[in-house]
Each structure stands twice: as C-alpha cells, then as structure tokens.
Figure: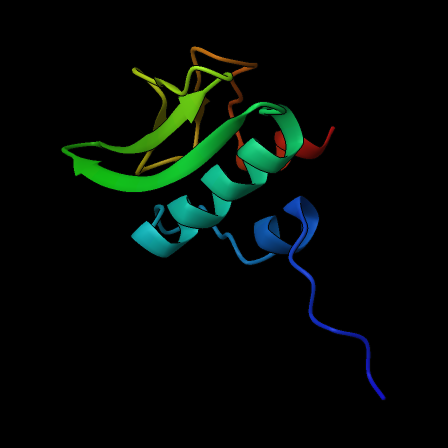
Length: 95
C-alpha cells in the first residue's frame, strides 16, 4: 500500500515555477502554503484577479476579520502580507 498524497507547504511550492509568471493555480498553491506556514488562526478563502497581482482572500483571528492587502505578484511570485512576513520569492516561505 502506498502512502497517501498529503499536501504540505513544501509539496505545494514544488509545483510553482515563477520563471514564466504565476498562474491562478500557482497563486493558490503559494497562498495555501503561506496560510499553513504562518496563519495559525485564520482561514484561506481563495484568489481573485487584480491587474498585476493575485489577491489572497481570507480571514484572520477568532473574529474572522477579513484580510486586506495580501497580494502575490503575477510576474515574480513576490508575496506582500499584512498579517505575517512578506517574501520576494515563494520558496522563502519555507526558510
């Protein structure tokens, strides 16, 4: 019997290649990895398209306050987060 395919931040980020820009699917992987790694009390809600950025939707804390200003650059994968560290490259989440 083989082991189940379990998603982890590392396994999600292995599927991201920023050399050709960041697709919606890749942005989903980056956002999920970020939430699992850094957002202890919150919920990931999805991705929306905003010109040069993917906007990460979610809520933070017990009160489920909406997260505003959390973006992923479509060209580089750089992450700008108001609720945790920001990163120049998605793989930096794991460092």
